[in-house]
Image (tube, rainbow, N blue to C red; front, side):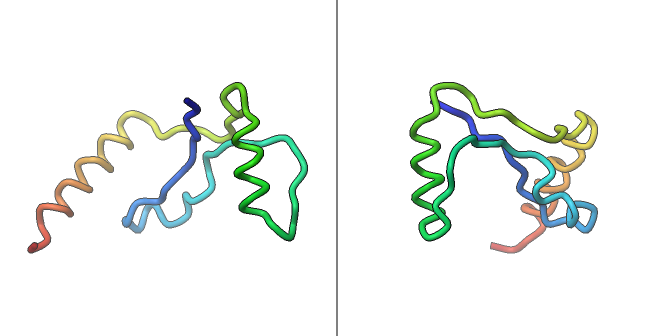
Length: 78
């Protein structure tokens, strides 16, 4: 099973510019008329982890974001 690395910006002001800073590359031809199908097909053809680009968050930043998400989650009424 492949793990597809990527960024999901968190709902914090400091995270607004982080979308697309970490991800993966697929080698192959893209069909501009059917891009989703082309990506699906390229992913199905993969036999190894795709090449990643970008830099992961530091441990400190990751922990801060996780704590912030928990505070945000618990602070909202259900």
